[in-house]
Every structure is written in structure tokens, then in C-alpha cells.
Image 1 (tube, rainbow, N blue to C red):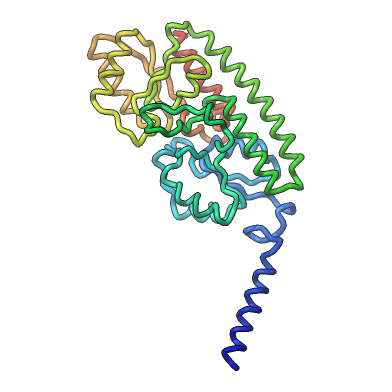
Image 2: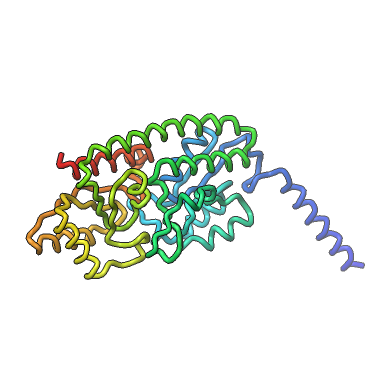
Length: 313
């Protein structure tokens, strides 16, 4: 009799717990009555969410300035933030390769969104040296980033339908800015003499940028910084620079400068000179509160730096 009583009590307790959980979000309470707690992996994604979500969201980006997402490993604190989030946005396409297992696990209990999910495979780069995988650096084609913004709007509206109209209005306003940015980028790149439209960086992050806006892009390392450049890679790139009188090469804020320094020294050994054209933001944005700390400002900074160096200004 006692055993049967305990069993019934446990069943009743379970039902109470289940009923109490119904109608509440992961952290308790009605989402419409408070801000949405969002965690994004990269700064670019966090910026997109902030623009779409506006006052309805509280966004935290895990990977700040100078952080390389290819090599990033989540800390215990990061995992705790992800578990407390109402929704998670990440790039996908294996940009955050070391975090894949975490996203798979969290997707069982909360919206966990790869923002590249709706980009047509026909629009994705599949470099032969990247073992049949897609290039994840889609933010360098502004028109593809517009698709990311639309994905963010869709998922926020699904999670918080009472604010769907707000998200739609914010997204439309931001997309207009992005369309203007896209046109501006093309106009600026067109001012570079055609023979000088060659962009050389530490790793091959700017492929979408080159394809969209018309530059020959070459990176010392491959699509992922997990790949290592050997002496032969350095010499081959140095030969190309010397033979084609390339005026400038660029370092990246999230990649060690030593790789580009090695290329420059190899060019000098051939009796030629190549300048460091400046620092580009590739896998991470600039400091919060600066122009480069936003997606729009980061793109403008990169374009101005490239145009200035390659045009000889």
C-alpha cells in the first residue's frame, strides 16, 4: 500500500511540474512581457539581430573583436549563456566547427538557427581545396547578408509573434541600408584600375567579396585558418606578387600577422617591394562603439582600405 501511495504521489508531482512549465518560455514567464534573450556567435550576426530585434531583444555575441571563429572553443561560461538563451543564432557552414556538437544538443530544447540556412546552394562558393564544403564567409557579399537578415526576422517573429510587425519593419529598414551599401561597394571597387584589382590576404576569407564585386582574391591560407601555409605556399604567392607588381597586401584583424610578413619578406628577397595596405576585418568586427564595430561600418572600412591601397592613393 505504501509503495502504491509513493508511486501515485510521484506521478502527481510530475504532472504538477509539467503543467507549471506549459505556457512558459525556457527561463520562465511570457516572452511578450520582456526582452528576448539572444545569443549569437559572431559579431556580424549579433549586429544583424540587434538591427532586426531593436528594443525587443537583448543580444550577446560570444566572439568579440580579433577572435577567429574557425579556432574558437566555447568556454563553460559560453555554454551557460547558450543554455540560458531564448534563441541562438550561429553562422553554420562549419564556420564554428568546434561548436557543432553544442548546437546539435541545444537544438533539442530551443530554437538554434544557422542563419545561412535559406541561402540557395547555387549562391554558395564550393572551393575545390575545401573538400566539397561550402565557404562560410557569406557576409562579404552584401546581397547574401540580406538573406541572413531575412532569416533572423523570420525566426524572431516565429518565437515572438506579438512583435512580428516590429521585426518586419526593422528588417525592411535595415535591408534598405544594406542595398545602398551593396551599390556603394561596387561603385568604389570600380574606381580601382582593373590591373590592380587583386586582393591578397592572410587567409581566403574574401572569396564572396571578389566574386560579387570583381576582384581576384588570393589568400595564403585556405578557407579555414585551421589549414597551415607551408614554405612553398609563401614562395608561390611571393612569385605572383613580384611577377604582377602587386602594390599591396593586407593583414586581418583576427589572423596572426606573421603569415603576411613572411610573404612580404619573400617578395623583398626577389628584389621587389610590396606594401602592407592596412588591416581588414574578416572573421570578426571591430571594437564595440566604433564604426568598425557594426556590419555597415566594417564593410565601409574594408572597402576604403582596399581602394586606397590598390589605387595608390
